[in-house]
Length: 334
Image (cartoon, rainbow, N blue to C red; front, side, top):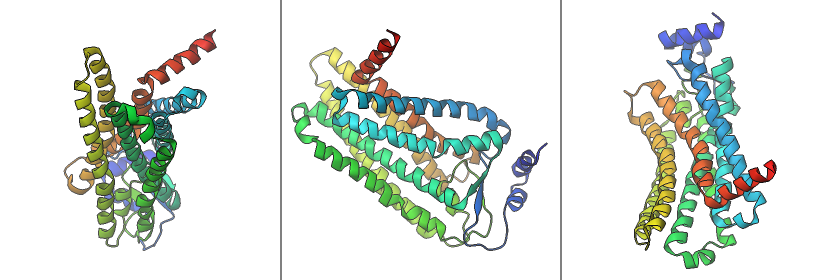
């Protein structure tokens, strides 16, 4: 058995001993590196777990790059909804790429070490782009609300300057709200251990290692969650309630079925993003009886599943993008 495998076995049976093996127990303000354990308790199945994760990552890369390419090549798709889709595709590419490569290196090569600065950088990118993704969901819901409930005013409400302002607001909110996270985490000191029982540098998992009082970190994280997810979910819920009311008032059954199918798929992908995120957030604070491996798996789901589903639900199921995609493939075959 190699050293990494031996340490994994020790960790699953004697967590305290493993932590001391990896870390220095003397006080230090900023550790030079952290150790990511992966999924604690499931070390022996890391290789098998990596297979679906790798497949999801490849689908996310292919799907989101395809969305960006098609919208770039097709002038008819230069409209507000598709601009927001391009932003969502770019955000998903950054979100998945900031976590998956390191995660796979843990599962495949036992490369668990991550520099302190790299860990805080990953922390910032994960949380800021997750907040941006939530903002884009709001923008897409608003676009669909105007398009279905007030179609005659769509072009006058969602003008190019308005789309630019919404996009900038989404980006700035994600950066400004999350920017304090790495600075608060940097304050330390980390004198207990530098072992993170996770597959990536999640904010709460990192600050829990600090010896100092982390109430400020906890309260600020809670505030950001309420300021981001609370208003976003409220607006999305209101928009889709109005959209569903408008759908059921459509004159023909065919039109109702078609529009309802599109909106229901949008709602499903939004729920696939918010529900695991909320579960992970609540488990960190209240779910002390939830197995750690289950918590880590759910935390991975909310970062990896939406980037895979978004280009399929928002892209392939959108007729204009689907038609353009078929046209590209048929043209190449000719």
